[in-house]
Length: 377
Image (tube, rainbow, N blue to C red; front, side, top):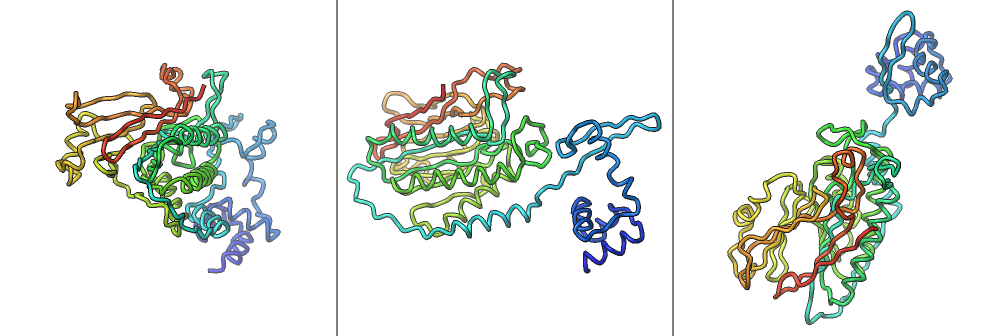
């Protein structure tokens, strides 16, 4: 099918734009754009943009209106403004273009042998790129730029605090509501409306650039293990983002990835056994038994230090099972978030937890030996 010819013929017949869009498999807005580019005028043009012209007459930019009511003496009309959105294909194509432009040839770092190695865990929990908070409503501003700035500042702060430890590995935990919303209508995956800053394609690109920047900051220090945790705000786009980050570093021998959709991820380091998860799924009290059945080496004495790192709640909580004196059981931590409360959280009173990014130092033989926190005042 020649799309341009079809649009030209159907315009001449006066076929409604919505029907033409179905014929050519395009959005109505794309049909109108093509028609304008060809210099075509629809016979019923006075009716096509009546809503748009009415909104403009009120002094309002139509592109800033998602939906509304127009009431006249003749009728009361509810309308939806189907603003042009980037399709998934367009979004992925843009990511591929970015990767081709970047297309780095990463040279593997030659590491000096470390006699007393340590692992640094960096966990930027619940960053929520795309969240909007206004100080006039919540007492604190938060937007895309603040989120990015806090991430970089927090990672640098943890690296400074960890500089006294000889590191042979860094575990960088990603996901965990990195994106604040998951649909063009600015809702979470399940459809909950959010206070937002930016469009879906915009926050995706911002998060991709941010993750690339952080990983490139970490690799000169030690080899990086990237672990992705699926989450409730961005279950779909967060997974796509993790795949894009992994593809970006596909030639880098100093970075490994676990970006599967599995909700609970397991990893080991010496005698340490880790489980990371967003925290919105299994009950916290069930995590030790899940770890014991899901990880084959649970009972191995080599995995005698067991840790569960969770997110989602934006505040600190530590629970220990059978961990007293020199008997090591399971330690579960819910981590703080660097993001500010939005209007809903502020109204509910969920606004008193410190804003922070946390990290942990683990020794191969002695388990966790240090907890690091970078606060945002």
